[in-house]
Length: 85
Image 1 (spheres, rainbow, N blue to C red):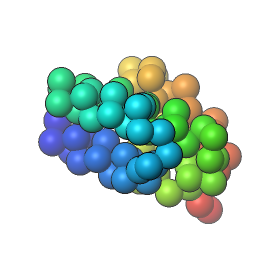
Image 2 (cartoon, rainbow, N blue to C red):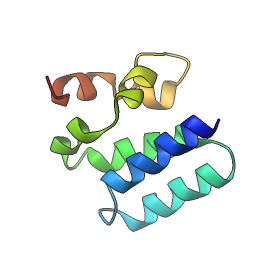
Image 3 (cartoon, one colour):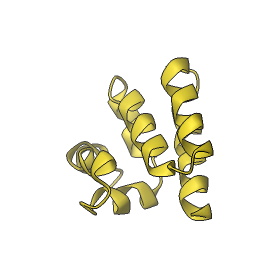
Image 4 (cartoon, rainbow, N blue to C red):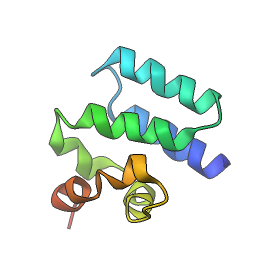
């Protein structure tokens, strides 16, 4: 769980200041023990800035490949497309 929280916080740093309301919701998700949803919120914020997907940690890409993390999994194609090679 600590690793997911750390990953969520890294993701929020990437999108910091772009959507304060969603960012606040994501922080609430972390506090409520659902860091995966916070990561999904960060990915949602990045949708308007697709160049940011390349900055997300490899751990997010790994989670996106896991269909059990459905809120993150839906971003798999975007992460693949914009991932640094």
